Every structure is written in structure tokens, then in C-alpha cells.
Image 1: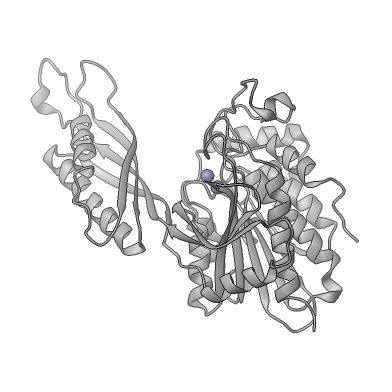
Image 2: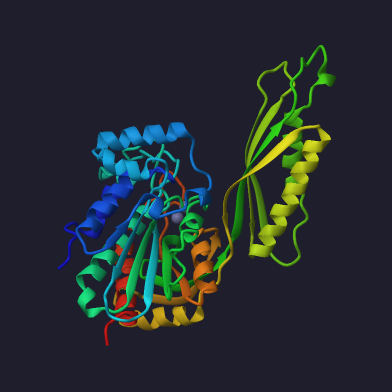
Length: 427
Ligand SMILES: [Zn+2]
Ligand SMILES: [Zn+2]
């Protein structure tokens, strides 16, 4: 007996209207929890889901207050908010069939982005009235589709549990954007005894719906960090020599970060995304703030960029006699999908009529903190893969007019169901 009463599109649109950025997914967590509660899962919330100290890039207190009030107005009960209100969002659902068998885990990310959704007429969510109700926040990456896929998978497993074996863990992870949330779940030990680990993304590659890749290559390892320079202010006319200029320290850092020699072993990236400095025209700037990221084709290449960046930043600070603080805001390693699981996925879906083009792998070319989870599973001798479910992208991910081709949802859900039926069916 299935529990979910709405269809895939209705559910996706419901979540699309309620985007919340990483670690403030209060309404999202509640809505996921409410559905799972009607099934036979054991549910975990708050500090049982993640290790607070292993989170990165947790928003400022004001953001929590704003999102908390919004959740209260929406109707999330205060006693529920107690679990999540300090940024311990997300839900983990486990189910033990009682029949001996492998441990299956799947991860779905649930956060939105700090983007204002387009109100242009040709943007379907506006036209069909499921545009974001949260001004300045948007599901512009398709995680509304991931939540939906995860819930339908959970429903299927629950409804079929008598014919399944082994154990299931379904992770609804907060704060994937800027690779901030996965580590805190890994550090809680959730991936330590997983045999088969699955995750994936809708979109990414601009290809027709029905294309599925059983695995993914080209995860870029990444480090995100903030930098604070602290100098000394002085009157810019009377005694500029008495100041230690933070604006110049940050500027030299920005230029020289982009001049780090590229590594011969493979591709790397660096981006100084923001820089703010100073307080007034006639004042030597005594503070500067920057948001920076590095990436690399491998964990080692990213590490190279990150270490060089630290050297450059310290040198720029020294040059202008500034103090400097580097604050880590998120990280993701590179990961390699297990060949055995790629083969298993391909075998599982061979009769799936919705899949018209089945590929071994497609490249991601981006960073994903699920690689933290994959790394842990692989370390413990489990197998992991990350699947892609492309569709024709009218606008790219993180664009104010990004939208899902909703027919991809059925492809994703049916792929997961085929995998469960193939790997987890009772003999
Ligand atoms: Zn994204
Ligand atoms: Zn995404």
C-alpha cells in the first residue's frame, strides 16, 4: 500500500514553492518528516542526523530568525522546530526488513539557493502558479525534484518491504550548495556500514529525457573559504603612513591568487567571488573580506590550489602588515564511482521502457559534497555510484529561470525502484 497521495509533479511543485537555503530548511524538513512519519521508518532529526561542529558555512543568526518566523507562519509546530532551529536540518529514515541482506543507502539533497526566481512570462513556475513563495530563495538546482524522488523511493521501499531484504537508509541532506552539509552526516557515522550507496542529480547535461548515466566522472574537488583581513585605519590625508591598508592587502591577494601557477597534472580552478573592504573615502581601510573557492580535478590538485592560496593570502597580509584569518566554509573531495555498481545499475534497468539512452558515465564537471559520503562508503569497502538524469536545459542550473522538465522525475524514480528490485529483492 502506497502512502503518498499526490503525484510526482504535484509534489515537486509543492516543494518548488517552498525553497529554503542550506541549514534553514525548516519547512522542507517538516514536510519530508510528515510524509515519512506515515510509513514504517525509524526517523532521525536534529543532532541525530548531523554533527553540528562538522557543518560549514552555517548562516548568520538573523537568517535563522527570519526562516524560523516564516516556518511558524507556515504552520510548523514549535516543538518540531526545536529539533532544527539552530541549523540541524534534514531527515534520515531507516528501515530494517528483518531479512538478512545488504545495507542500501541513498542520499537526496534538499536545499534551495539564494536566488530570486524569475517572474518572466515564459517561466513555467510563474505561469502555472508554483513560483517560489520565498522572495530571494529558489529551487534553481532541481533539489525539489530530488526531494520528490527520495520520498517516492521511500514510499516504494516501505510498501514492498515484505518482499525485500537487508536494511535501508534514506538520507535527506541539508546544505549541499557550496558543499557544506555532507561532512556533518558522514562524521555522525551514517555511511560507515553501507554496502550500496546511491545518489545522483537531475539535469546537469543538456540531453533528452530518458538519458540515464549509471555513473559519473569529473567530480571537481573543492574548498570554499572566507578571508578576513584586519589592518589599521588612519586619516587618509593627515597620516596615511599610520594605517595598515586592508583594501590593498585584499586586492593584492585577489590578483595574485589568480596568478597561481597551474599544475601540470590536471585541471584546477580558483575564484575570488566577493571582496568588500573599507568604511569611507578618507579612511585607510582597516578591514577586508573575501569569499574564495578552489577546485581541482583530483583531491590532490585541489589541495595544491588551496595550499598555494593560503601562501598568497598570508604574503599579501604581511606586505600590508595586516592580520589575516582564513575560515573554511565547505569542502568536497573527488570521487570515483564503483565499476561493480555501474554494472549493477545497467543490469537493473535493462527493461525500463522510460530509459532510451543508457550510459556508463557522464561527466559532472562540478563539485558535489556527496563525494564525502562516497569516499567514506568506499573506505569501508562498500560500493558507491552517482547517477545523472539529464533533460534539455532551457537555462542552466542556478539561473533565475532554471526549471525542471518534470518528465525526468518518473525516469529517476523508476531507475531507483529498478535498482531496489534488482539488488534488494528477497530470494
Ligand atoms: Zn546547485
Ligand atoms: Zn544541485
